[in-house]
Length: 59
Image (tube, rainbow, N blue to C red):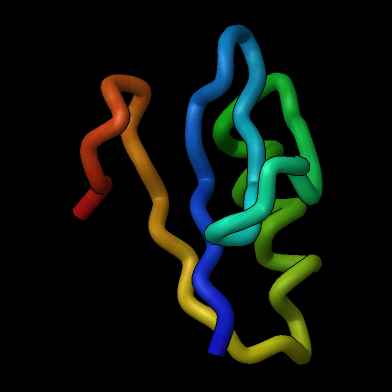
């Protein structure tokens, strides 16, 4: 099972596979990034860790 992170990167939010240097998707807002993440993860097995702007994990 793959692990992914949704994090703030400058002015953007990015979805990135753990261990990869490239973002899968970049979005201007966290809400848009979460919508893209849901579509990307549909049919895939994996864990997504969603971070706050300060980098800490969101509950």
